[in-house]
Figure 1 (cartoon, rainbow, N blue to C red):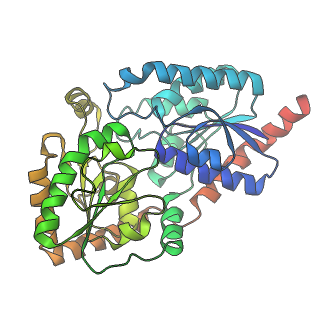
Figure 2 (cartoon, helix red, strand yellow; figure 1 turned 90 degrees about the vertical axis):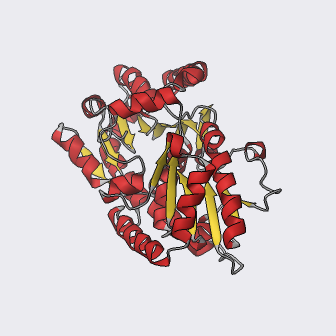
Figure 3 (cartoon, rainbow, N blue to C red; figure 1 turned 180 degrees about the vertical axis):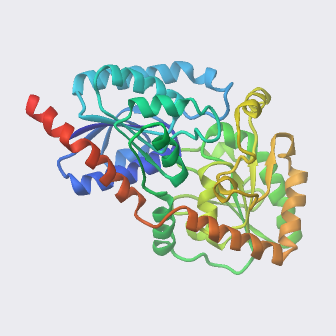
Length: 376
């Protein structure tokens, strides 16, 4: 079996790597090429396009990346014409993959969507196109699968692969040393996110560290340069790379950029303040399009405000320090938040999400792969 696998962001790279490893355990002869980051490459993907420079935050920022996005699109389409994949697995990154999917669909390549676009939050019309083109849609949340089934799609909920990531990280990593209270900073996995979130996070963290005698760790996403995090050593902060889950689970509080990282913190049981800042234009457009009352996945999955969210002009050091101090001074409030986060953990499904996703994909594709192989 020869697959095209494409992921365009750090979270998609992580989910794709686990999925590809699970697929190879079931089909050792399986080969894969496409787009991804270092994790997917380590799992066995032959990269024809690199995803690290493509991820963007916001709507207006996409225009800055258009040349790189079109180059990646051409590389993938050319590779698909040369290699004639048995199927394509498209992981999140919805606008890019929407264009790629239409071209592959016209070429007769069976499509599987893994990690559905957030059609329940905005631009629900995308779900109809996905339902029409996809051989199978494999989702992370049960309510997503229901949306696609109502549109006539073959949809399966596999559960969230982060459940396994976090459990394995907590079991394999050494416990954090030290007895000082800990504040963790997660400013984002993309350059644009870090540039907008780092200064207010760092300023608030420095003030809180002095006030509460905190240790501060910066959880740096793969591929981000030290230069983006000005003043780390001068402020006495330290970087954590690789397996960051033991540090995150030990933290009394975390400042977290909205995204998959909020679910990581929830699975670690870590109280958090979620921040999100993008360009004024992107935020104005997003406010008109987004149909859910929260920005963070933790609150969306819970269906209520479990953790506070600071957006746009609220994301500044003074406000973050005030919100952080109010929580650090209120043990009962922190305990209540931890209890709510435990409920969110239960909603993310049992372990084995990547394994279930691999089974669902092979179940949908293997008859087609046998037919394609016979025709070669």
